[in-house]
Length: 170
Ligand code: HEC
Image (cartoon, rainbow, N blue to C red; front, side, top):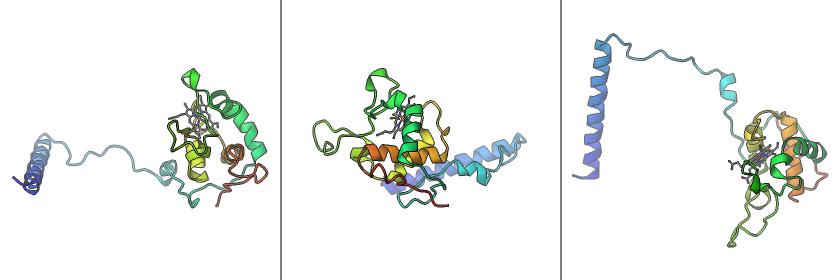
């Protein structure tokens, strides 16, 4: 039998199975559609976002290298190291965040924000969503802007005094 015929046969069996299941549930007095849960509100959905390179969806806010340095020391250094060098040995330790330029095509690629993260918005999105690992979502948007400015500054991607690489749009 051809693949197409197989598919047709499969769909026919699935449709029949579904029809039988519906008949069976109707006979047992179950509603055709279970009325479970509640409709998601815009507020519920707001936590599921993604920030593309053009910055759509960035929240309003700002943060400087100096502000980010403090956020980093308080909330990130314990796992990512005081020089952003990573702490691989401790198990829960975080990745190295800077360095590794030019190593990607080598035998031992060092993958960091400096060497292979393509967009500042991705760093913002990732940190806001999932860091610090032990308390994701605990930073304010300004703190996230700051710590991104700090990491990009340490990575020599933006000047340390440029301060606001990813200022949000309302
Ligand atoms: C409790 C330890 C811990 C803390 C605190 C922490 N991180 Fe992480 N971080 C991790 C671990 C572990 C990973 C690797 C996660 C994975 O691969 O899924 C990671 C991954 C990352 C990455 C992705 C690196 C890459 O190249 O893939 C970034 C960026 C990052 N963390 C930034 C931060 C920032 C900024 C903070 C502070 C606001 C922070 N982290 C605090 C443990 C931590």
